[in-house]
Each structure stands twice: as C-alpha cells, then as structure tokens.
Length: 470
Image 1 (cartoon, rainbow, N blue to C red):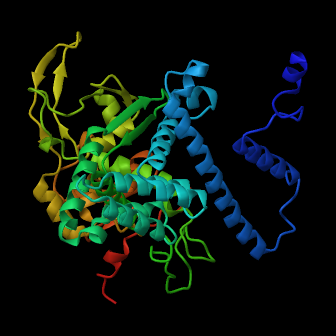
Image 2: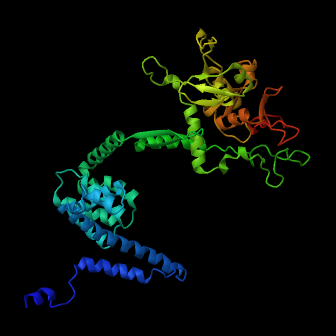
Image 3: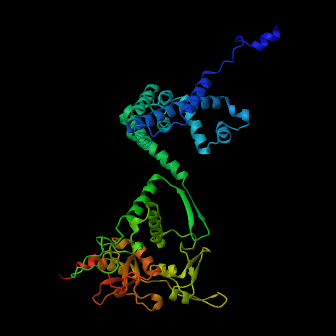
C-alpha cells in the first residue's frame, strides 16, 4: 500500500504539476514553433508594420520574465549549482552571454526587483523595451539620496511616460534633467553633478590601443570621453567637408570653340581621374584619410617633451634616395617608410642634417631649418587662397607648403617657388605623374599626367581664373 501511494504521488497519479512560469515558457516555445515555417511575404505593409511592433512588445514582456528569474537566481546565488562563481559568470558560461551583457543584465535585474518596480511592470506590459528600462533605472539611480520615495516614484512614472515618445539616447538626456520634475530649484545643480560624475568616470576609463598589422597598416581602437570625441568629430568633419572632386566647379568649362579640356567627361563635364573624386569614397574611408591628415598637422613643437627628448620621429634616409624618391627610410621608432613619402613629409618638416661616418658615428650635426617659415605660409595663403588643385576647397590652414622644384634638387625656399597643396593633392603630386608649377604670370598650375591628357594642358584653380580679365 505504501509503495502504491509513493508511485501514485500526491496528485492521484496525474502527471507532476509544472510551475506556471515553466508552463508559460513551454507554451511560448510551442506557439513559436507553429509559425516557424510561415513566410512573411503574404503580409500587407500595414500588417507587417503592426506585427513588428507586436513582436517587439512580446520580446519586452519575455525579457521582463527572464530578468525576474535572473534576480531570483542572483538572490539565491543559484549559479553555484553549476559551479559558477557568480550569476554573471553563470550567464557567460551557461548561456553563452558576453561578460558585458551579463553584467548589465544582472544589474538591471536587481534594479527591477528593487527600487524600480514601476519600470519592471512597464517592461512586463511591453510599454518600454530593455534598453529604455536600463536608461530609466540608471537615471533613477543617480537621484540624490535625500529625494523622497514619493518624488522618486513621480520621476519614475514621468520617465516611463516619456519612453512612449523617445528612444534610449533621448531618454538618457531627459533622465539627466529629471530633477526639473521633482525639484526645479535644485535641478541645475543635480544635472551638473551627474555630468561631472559621468565625465570623471569616462576619463578614468579612457583607453587606446594601436596594433601594427605587419602590412603597412596599424589597427587602432579607443574609448574617450564624449567631449573629446565631439572635438575630434568636428575636426574630422572639417577636413572631410570641402569639395575635393573636380566636377561641375572644377575647370571643365567649355572653351570658346565648344570643346572641353582634356580629361573631362564629354557628357557630365567631370574630370575623368577617379583619384581626385574623394567624395566617392565611403564615409569610413574619408574619416580614415582625414585622421591621417589631422595627425600630420599636429604641432609637435608645442607638445610636451619627455625629459629632454622631443616628440619627433627621426628619419634616416640616404641622400640619393631623398633626391630620387626611390628607396626606403628608417624611422627612429623602428618602422620604415618609402622614400617618396619621406620626401612629401619633408616639405613641411624641420630638417636636421646629420653627417654620418661609415660606422654610423655622427660626424657633424646641422641646425634645423624649416623649408617654409610661418610667415611665408601666411603669405602663400594670402596669395593662393588654399589648395591650388582645381576643384579643391581646402583652406590654407589645412594645406602643406610644397616646393615646385624639390629642395633636394636645388629648389629655392621663397614665395615664388612654393604652392599650397592639401594632403590629398600633396600625395597625388609626390606619388603619381601629376606635377605642379608656377606659370610665368605667377599663377600656380597643375599638370595632369600624359595618360589623362597627352598634351598635359595646365589646369588652374577657378579662383585664379576669376582674376583673369574678361
């Protein structure tokens, strides 16, 4: 009899009762299985839009249930059942979650289980998504400890209402200003404290890595405070914004005989050379090129010195390679660069001639001489107005002074021998068959390669053509 009772169990031989949450999740999985093979193409546009929203709400509701379970697991330290050292470690090992996401979820689960009950209810009803819930909980967590429970609930309710109209990014900004809802008189001070705390944390966590790839490129990554990131963004945007391609405004006007200059498309009037059309590059590529240009223009003479060492990279280059542009140069960092790039950088660099003996002992040390002084650059900027390549709007401040006749070949350092070129066109002149010269009337001219224009017809920037008499 005893054995029969044990076999039948406490529910009279019926299948073991399942927990309601287990039954709910099983039902969800079974229901999703029913539509696993159903295609979406038969839905109308209106139905598709509505169902995307419905699916998002369903996801939010399931997320609330998951976080509710996670909070209970964390409270009991249930991860020890599978030998996990923490709940976050349990998620990483058992649920294949990233460490960052695991930590975020454990913190959010604790907030929803504790001081953010209204947010939990809203998430469970599908009124907010998990990102919005996280932002609201963070904002509430930054409220001063002296804020009353009533005011805290009022702030929580207000942010939940705002979530119906704003995404996580806007909600984060509004969360900083929640003080205006609960205590307008102290709101400014509260927002200031929040921003100061954010800035201090961001600065404490600032980092940057540079990893040479071994193929002439270096992969970098950084995390910096928002303020400095916005400064960098503005600088890079300024470098990317001027038009660099040579199209409608770039000297492809028809000649009096109705013919367009060589190198221009007969239909569109755009110059054929694709290298000058930087706007065809992707945004990421243009950002990368702008960063290179920004780095090359850093005022190294104004940077702090480490001990007696100057923050300058030295370049060892054979004189014949400097003259010819063929060969390689060795950097003081242990790296290398082509002789042609060394020549281009030398246009703006301070050169310090070192005469070495056969055993690389320094026999004589010259003094640094800049090819073009600051005053000469100002004068060139006044004369030429910026990059002299037709169609380029790069201003003088972002141009490099270039010798029409290289210094290594006896070129003079005077205003009559220098032109301003942006980094892009400076590369073009040094690395390709494009040339630049000063015409007899003192106007800079670009000479295209014979592959583009066999006659190498000189091209003047539009700003110089406007100066010509009608």
